[in-house]
Length: 253
Ligand code: PGA
Figure 1 (cartoon, rainbow, N blue to C red):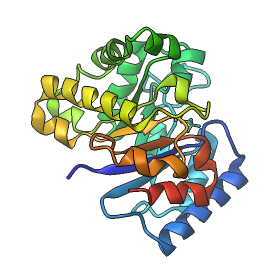
Figure 2 (tube, protein in one colour):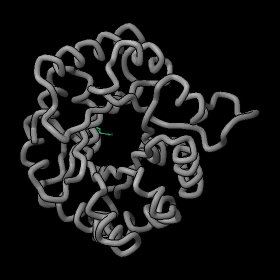
Figure 3 (cartoon, protein in one colour):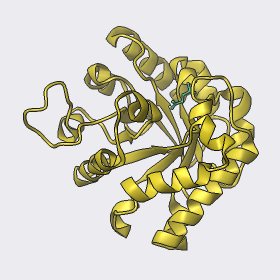
Figure 4 (cartoon, rainbow, N blue to C red):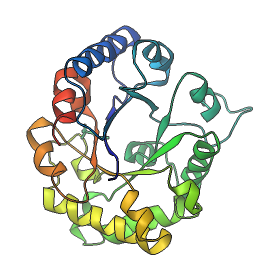
């Protein structure tokens, strides 16, 4: 049975003290009521928080993730944070290609492919984001868009490396908007993604791939979305900033 994951993307929210408090609250809730069997919990605080948050979480209960990484391994890249640095503060997974990175910071397919490679080279796990904008969905080309994102930044990996990857399907029109994809829309795209992976890597690897849904996911809609056969959990933005709400989402399987 493939792994289910609920990952919280804190984005650029909280200061260190508030972030540590949020992590402690979540830890306490997971001790009182652990995640269902086979469900992994991850949180992605801002870079500045990682080291402090790492001190208050049990890695058996919460996987520490980063929201981004540099596309180079070290050197004269002012303001960037390398994968090796993230690894040194306890990071296990990295969100790569979030639509906000693609849109506001102009991250292109080739840059994202380099980040994926560095993440894997450092034995960490990429959570690779893909998804179409509203105009693309209205034009009915969402499958082509997502296929191209995977082909250009992910499908160069060999089988062994691909096994480290999780994919997050995040329709851009659903992120932070309150407009959630219907469970059927999510299922349809997740099934399509799995079929692409099966064609490239074979049915067995496709069956093992964890595919998360992201975009206005909260406890009131998670149960229905997570019940779909190809939806293996969620990448949660706004609702991850409230420990009790995030914990309810973790319990939604
Ligand atoms: P949201 O964000 O849950 O606030 O829509 C999801 C994401 O961007 O990962």
